[in-house]
Length: 293
Image (cartoon, rainbow, N blue to C red; front, side):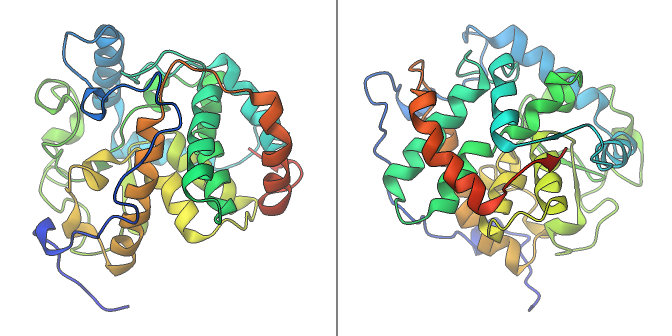
């Protein structure tokens, strides 16, 4: 694969796959500019700000490496995808400024809108359904600052597009470490996102679970799962200097997924029991049986 230099993100702006998104949940959907409101006027501000303060204080290179080793044993339990989804009935994301519903509702909202716009790509429907499944770590006792929230690269400087960047990293020791606080830190130019370490959370955990269990989701789906919370990259256009050509090809798919992940959030609870048979068939196709978590 040829090497590319992407220090200036304007060098590569992939065209959207769909130019607009007609939301299925229009009666309850709010204007797109009102999503991801991190101002003090938001009713969830205190909860969200506290979660990000903890994330940005504790997520270091050493912490991430420890969590990769701990959760990478895949010895927590064996269960089906649908059993794992049911666990999300008990989980409300404390980093989410947009909604206060159990995460399972968001899973089906996302999947159903993808199914409407992309009827021919069943793997995409399933990706939407399971994308947050790694949040079961919180059900099992992991603090939400190690599960939820936007992700960022550890091992190099904290970029300005990170949510609450200005006042939440003051006590993160990596910010004072000359090995980690420069533009490239411990990485090489265009080394590829496969070589970097993101702050630990549900994205990376589920990606590793699927690879470990030999899921047959295509690489586009796996990239959506691994990077959907990586807002400083897919929305902030930071870290382009660490990307390679394949990353930039996957970026357009991650951005396509982001529209469904973000703009389908509303208070309407889907008819989950009615939808389960369709998605169970997709689970049986791409990741059947009990998986090791």
